[in-house]
Length: 229
Image 1 (cartoon, rainbow, N blue to C red):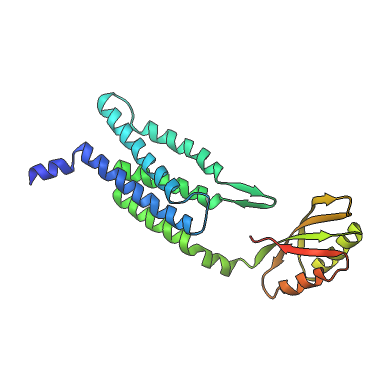
Image 2: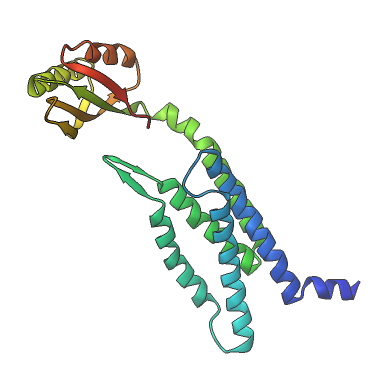
């Protein structure tokens, strides 16, 4: 019995156990992100988690050989994870995407650090809480958030300025607050342009189909495409 306990508490057995557990817990968060087709999925999260555990183990191992502070390596990891998180954040006009995934990567880093340091309860509870937040928080957001973004690509064949003015009047009629109007492309030979419109609207009692149909009925409008958010 004592021999078994000795093996279990040995540095090498604990290292294997921590690396596997760190990868599994971080991978659970990654699976949730993968289910939503986010830029960082199971593999990315599992790799970040196991890397965080390994950093802690390296600090512990080096502290046994040399007289150094094992926490210094972990501190550098938290600084460096910002570069990976920044790579998942994308800016598209007025929209910023990837912030939740970047925060998830930070979370799995901390989970990995917890497992690597032997704080198993904290790492497992954190995994459970993060998973619940990522999986179910959108339901609460939908109830509290009454506003949404409308993005339209509208192809106009001629009389660009007059047609844009008509579009603005219709959007104003349906209480859409215009945030941006810009040209996407120009075809001079055909005197054709596609304009990109971004606006905010109140989701409550908003008649989106009626609005789109009304814009389509404008004489000089050839096509109206709504971008998915």
